[in-house]
Image 1 (tube, rainbow, N blue to C red):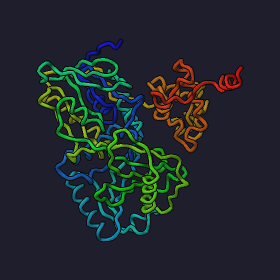
Image 2 (cartoon, rainbow, N blue to C red):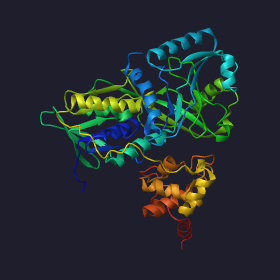
Image 3 (spheres, rainbow, N blue to C red):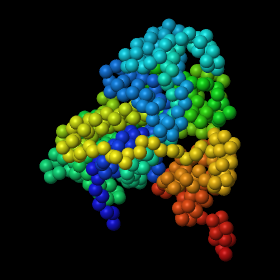
Image 4 (tube, rainbow, N blue to C red):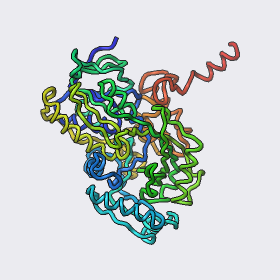
Length: 494
């Protein structure tokens, strides 16, 4: 039987927005719960995206996106150190061919300046190719944005949530919202019903991504609709991570920003995405057609890219609202319901600024039902699990001397140790996918072909469960069905 739980605030969704908001709210003496139906975080769009921290020139001045993107960029630079998030300050270029594209670049330049983006300039082909020699010689001009950056998007979500939990926030995974609890006159929120019981709270915040219009509908709000847009990507081997040094965009079209080419924070090469409208809010599969479009688009920017460089593919769904902007509001009725919806690009960039705006909104609109008293025990920083691969030899030796498990390499591709995996499990990893998110075990060239069985064994040992109960990403995604020896004896009739 599920027990009832009592909070001041329930956040529905543990993506980058929900996690950043949980951390921002944890600076106040509030009882906060975050619920998410996934088995590990990040999931959804926060897990499958370009990991770009946008400069802020692409959004129409006067929109909420434009107001929050450049501010989010600034906040990531402020928070990356205290929250121990990997951030690569690489800059970005929007590449144009001919006078038609030059006019588009000039429009982006004007928009960016109006949005307060520093350092923007249009450069010629010679300057671009000096910085990015592998870019196609067809490019004649580029918009340079020095504040563009690359982030480890997995670390960012974990960092915000990890710090929020340090400050008293409760995270409930595999917890799906089924309905809202409303007062008898339906004028106020009183909580949320889930598959794991009731969460009583006077405030419910809707940060549920591609499901956010459905959750808003539970509150009687049908003012916007979400259309999922699928984006497909390739990840290329680290051997090719220095093919480009910055985040490269094609000139935007009516379909979006187009295929991009960029190093990841760990120096892989990432190419994509496509932009395909679809009905399904769940289908994040890749397609031959989509991946071909990605490869063709990437090669149009960097001709030396080939399919043989790839180590894996993935796809993500962006929550596109028909308002063409972020939906951030507090409903008059039911009082206590807050929308943070339609957070597509540049939503990841804007997330810290979105969190601050939502807290200000709550102070203004909801101070009659919750009280904002500073949390005097608030700790604003956290440390990630040591990134063993990138440490100096002396530090590796020191760690191994203190804990011999640091001398046991589990993932050869990414040089991940047993100690890192054990620490990830201590911090909440319960699946093979979660261990990969926390440590990068399985993220290398062999994609877990070598380390996968060892990760399963460590999870089973640390969680105290049989190996055949270990899952890839929760639910029914078990990797083993039993011992080979038992199967052999059963088939042999012994």
